Length: 184
Ligand SMILES: [Zn+2]
Image 1 (cartoon, rainbow, N blue to C red):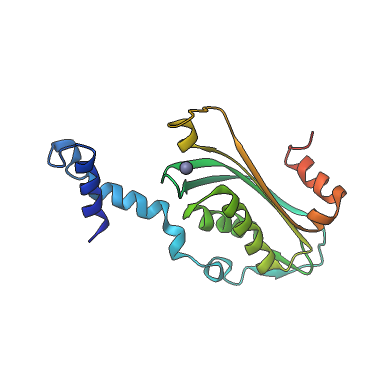
Image 2 (cartoon, rainbow, N blue to C red):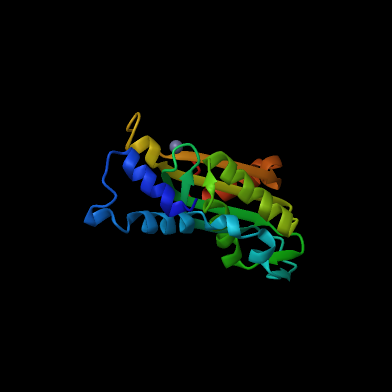
């Protein structure tokens, strides 16, 4: 059975009439939207990096902050939305900056929990760059918290994964947190 068929069943399950004018094309549209929101399943790390790894003797921290992040929680299929900040310390190879954002996007465009998303992004960057350290911080608001259940409208969830130098060195970690504006 196709995705539009299942959306039609969901409408019926909600007590709606899928034949009424406003809903006629909804199953098709909803299926298309959902497929777009999950298009990360069709991507791989190899496709995304696609040779954009360059030799460099830069061994200073590379940071990309405020990467817009849109994902879906795997528990409720509701969006969580926020920002990712990523950094790594190269050891001879640097990655095009847009590729960092695309790695974030590839994992975000799958069904996720924020903790795993953060970890997957960090591991992928580590894998690809063989960096001396990788840091990923995600701050996001979860619609499953805001629109239902406890209805905590203003709570932001923060997750971080620190690898290598970011884990071992306080100074390095503090520098990163300061640069993304998160140090106290
Ligand atoms: Zn949820």
